[in-house]
Length: 326
Ligand code: AMP
Ligand code: MG
Image 1 (cartoon, rainbow, N blue to C red):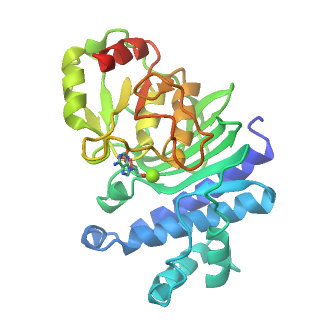
Image 2 (image 1 turned 90 degrees about the horizontal axis):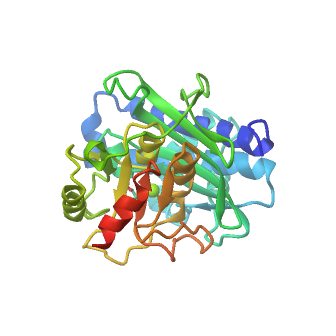
Image 3 (image 1 turned 30 degrees about the horizontal axis):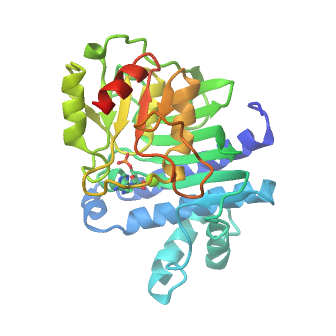
């Protein structure tokens, strides 16, 4: 698979459209951000709209491919959701003029929760809490073959383009192909740059990133681990798989995700890590679970054989794994 293969071209086109849909919903709320905080319906509309578009374009070109995606239409088909469904359809129509409520539901329902040897993993909006907070979120799509990610794409509409200018231009598209590297582009797929992870060798200089939400990771444990490793800088908290993107471009050195004490046995969703992990790996990074096991994407929707996540620049991986075992 190369950059011109049908998989890459289709996935890119679909992800760009889905991220434009999410941005449009955000723009329509400009100045009314309080709505995002008090009412989940904008994120629900964006979530369903993003999934409808991506499923439609992938299935159109790859009739037999399974798409393991977060949403289904059970709720959306209920009478109480008719207004939401109309709104979803309205936004999808900007990209697919013949969209109807029935068609939108059927596209969303292309998703299956039974993975096969080859399947797509989709998180239509990863980091919904970030979207609600008017913060980071991502549209994340990956192609998995025999348990290994082949292609990862991630649109981060709200992520600053230049790591040295966090207040500068926003909107990044990350692409990785197995064996061919990891790239960052603008949200329209232009201005492509090759990414590489940080060269930091001493943990003291490392910047680590973690979830914003305390329920998604054990912040206290992370802090203690950072002390043990003599990491001097405070953590960079960020929602969504954008964390893998900032590891890939050498901004953060480590991404830690030790299961939160509120849910110690939590099994990660495949769609929450497939795209991000290949983006960090193809930039030269290493990604395992917190025990050092390779990520296993072959056990359905949940990563049953893994616990938590550790993504690093590779150089510091063993040092952090060792510290995790203490
Ligand atoms: P993040 O933005 O990195 O905090 O991750 C967001 C993702 O965390 C969501 O897409 C959820 O699927 C996932 N999530 C939900 N509950 C948990 C949990 N208890 N532990 C870890 N991740 C979770
Ligand atoms: Mg998610």
